[in-house]
Structure formats: C-alpha cells, structure tokens
Length: 94
Image 1 (cartoon, rainbow, N blue to C red):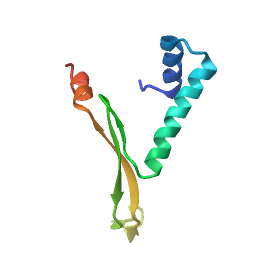
Image 2: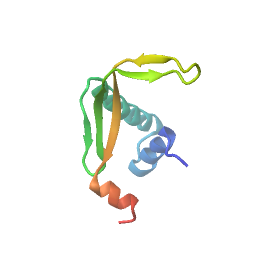
Image 3: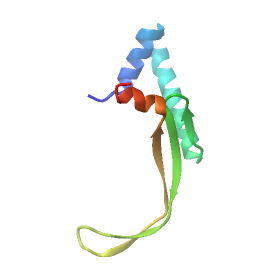
C-alpha cells in the first residue's frame, strides 16, 4: 500500500504533536518547495534519502502506436530519482 500525502500529514501530527492544520501546511509547503525547485531546473538533494534530478530530453523520432504513423516527439524535461546508499541498504534489509 503506498504512502499518501494524508499518511504524511497524520505522521507529522502524531510524531511531532502539531495540530492537523499545521501538519497539512508543513507537508504542502515542503512539496511546493520541492516542485518549484525542480520546475526551475535545479536538483533536490535530501541527505540520507536521495536526489531528485531534472534531466533534459532531446526531441526524438517516435511512432503513433494506434496508426503506426511516424511523429517527432518534442524536447522535454523529466524528473529522475537516485536513492542514497543509506536508503538502498535500508530497502535491502541492511
């Protein structure tokens, strides 16, 4: 079962003793900060967790799967995530 935004809010409220509204505001602010940083083209590094990176993808030739017609896919930016060694070890039971 995935960890949801609601779960994060509940954990902040329970673990840190903030009121519900404060917990929602904390999580929303954190996520907005991460989104705006990535949107500006900068990476986000969370020590002991991992790094969110913005990568540039060049325009490329593709194909419409429904019609088989060739198409040019435009250049775009994508977000990738590289986990830290600590996170990898924890996930693998270390």
